[in-house]
Image (cartoon, rainbow, N blue to C red; front, side, top):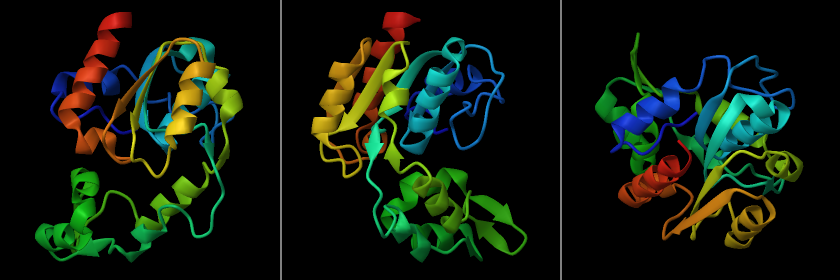
Length: 208
């Protein structure tokens, strides 16, 4: 699960601590069932899909959803959408070298970097990231529409993952969904952190 925008430490803590450690999956999600109590979900893409799978499978487990550009349908494609990550190194002798190798992906990956016995490593192996993302390709409309809790759908209008037409359909077909569109690509909370944080604040104020 990815936390809320980095300029909102109080929301980071809220979103993370309100989610019990066992609340990572539903009976229909790749990770299996959970016995968690009520929680909020602030996630993007595969995390968002797992979040609303959890909400659909265990209605009492999730009190609200914050979906950051996560679609209800991801068409199977070859190569996989994140296959470009396979060009990244998993380790490097220094943190600076690993950051340099990540290039424009640095804002997405630097928070997960960890010291390693031979230097520094990414938070996840690139192959594992691609495999995880590939597992969520397909149709998730039933799970998205099967949830009834309040939901914020934060959409980047230049996203290559969630088409704007689908974002509009997701909001119109699911009662209780607030759609906020920002001029950004799929990584809307990183490209527009202040606007994303403001949208999340407004949403939390309406239901908390």
